[in-house]
Length: 398
Ligand SMILES: *Cc1c(COP(=O)(O)O)cnc(C)c1O
Image (cartoon, rainbow, N blue to C red; front, side, top):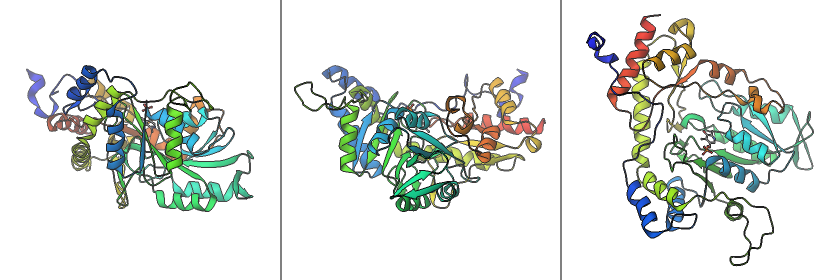
């Protein structure tokens, strides 16, 4: 058939999805074990095993499983002592979950712009805000405009790359703020040879279907602080104060991961080193193959970072490439390739229009120009070459 004349543009399978789970290990075996033994719910050995394996992998003292990453963030904010009408500095360029979680506890997000190179929360923006827009009174920081207490910083390590944490940790030591890392997209990434999720005071991971490892849905809270860990365990399990009597001194949450989900998590984390290596290889291959196309650029990997390259994303300069990111999304979609732009930044999100408005021009520009490319752990070279071939053709045909 005439369509097959160019081998680079033959669709190798029905569709190339953006990012799908890789389920080839002991998932079936461990889940079957749950079903065979009747340990299906939120008590069971796989929950404990999954917590132990994850805490060992990242090098945190404590890990507490939760139903998803969003609930983990909700609990982490409570453990960090964030109260109603406090403010929390958060990356504007993020999936909406951490900002929603800030609102769940009745606190307010203050949106921080991204940096130009790594697309992460800009430590300069944080420093400027604290120095110029806040004042310190009796050892606490207050926003001069809103008069609210600033309680915490919530950096989101987006797309698998770490935020530059050292300057942020210095500021939080100076201003006595809690740091909650949203590490949901960056499991396996290193910041100066330390695992992401162990640098702040508490951190969260997600095991949603598109994350590096998945339990269908799931999350984890990690911390080195024993009292925070105890509180996280308490709050995720309905704040039960007596093992026999139904006695509760506080309002808790039913946020505990089930044993079936944890069984899948154990099987997935057994393969994590291989998954990270595969993500890094995919990113490397894209950058080598697309680097010379005018108008295509990449998120840089910092010299102090090892990115997990969770979601490989390009920037498209329409004047040089020949079309903008949304037209490219549409053209690739017509050829069976799923791509997606970055999230609408939170400072312009209608869901959070009641929050103080701030200018975040870099995040806005990244939102307009970005496009995430297929990068499943199981993406084969033929499929990747097909995506690369299509991008070349789109540029040539501009
Ligand atoms: C995936 C994700 C979460 C958590 O998502 P869940 O689906 O609730 O597990 C939180 N923050 C960010 C930035 C995410 O990408």
